[in-house]
Length: 259
Length: 268
Image (cartoon, rainbow over all chains, first blue to last red; front, side, top):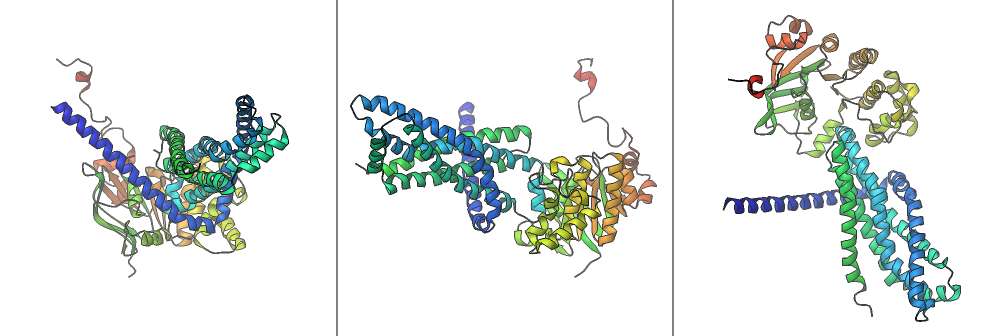
């Protein structure tokens, strides 16, 4: 009997903790949004961060984009060529990249490359009492440190994703498909609003999600080496799962009504 | 209403939870223009007092007055207005590692004033000059030593000419020369700017040298207070043990444990 009661109590405590952390994260998100207009007014602070998390992510985004586009092009060619439909390769690659792979892979790479560095940076700033010092100087670190990084993430992810998709298409073209069919089928089949537009909406959502997760886990990390290490791991795990789940939700909303 | 004490703490009790009380019914006074030390063993609640004065945490009972006004952590706007009037030196400086030495000192000026760049530059260089590091303005934080970091943080803490400067263990981990420089600076800056200083430290010699008044805290209580001469003449065993650095006394050498015979299985 006691064992059952203990189990129930443990489950209840877990549920309470989960609810508490969800509520806490939501409040934190709201605070971050509240500080965003001020961060936009001091855009120079965000520009520095855009360079750190955006520009410096370009190498990984471009190489990954080219590789993914190339592989996608090859596999599409092998499959479609059997049915004599090799001219559709461009369209298939473009739609896959614009709608799904570009936004999702960019967000995953961003979480691994930039999200982790944000989390570690904020965590170490906390451990070094830099955030406490800022508060003592009557400066809210959420406004001065977190909000500019939040803005930088939201600006960077869509741009990186656009670059990823563009390089991916170029990578697919490099496998040696007939130019005319490749481009004309793409031009014919890709819709600016439904495909490119929806893809961009996704990237903005992913940018918000991955940057928020990175900042929140860093800000809430324990101020110890283990705490920062755990927070960095959590950033990758939570961002990746969040991106994939959000992608499923967005895809089902965006593309379900299309023929 | 202007009072003689810039900061006054009345019957304050604080603990992170009900079972673990850090400070028990303590009252302290920090007169304007004076350098007052809070001394005590590591973990005796000294830094907690600074956090309470800065409104980072809230006391369980008792009150803290800053310039006659109660410190209220729930009123953020008022709290931030208060914090603009105080500067704090953190134990290891807490400098912003992504900014240069110059920008660290300029930080409070850029955040809280609309001064033109040329004036900010002059103020920053003057503050750095006061701590002897004008020549280090362009260095990165990774390029400065621990003693220099402490002095840069001091320049940052006084950038807005605060009325109250709080020092958290300013002498910890410094070489003898840096230690002498820091102690001298605390006294000199206090007198030159007319500020009030609170020094939290366990460094008896330095505190006796530069402080006008000293409080000795142990296990959350004030066990002694007075001028350096008064404390040195004190007959209180706890005060004597602390200022002479005796390993055993009212504060035992051993952390509470069961008898060693029992632990080793030797007890009959």
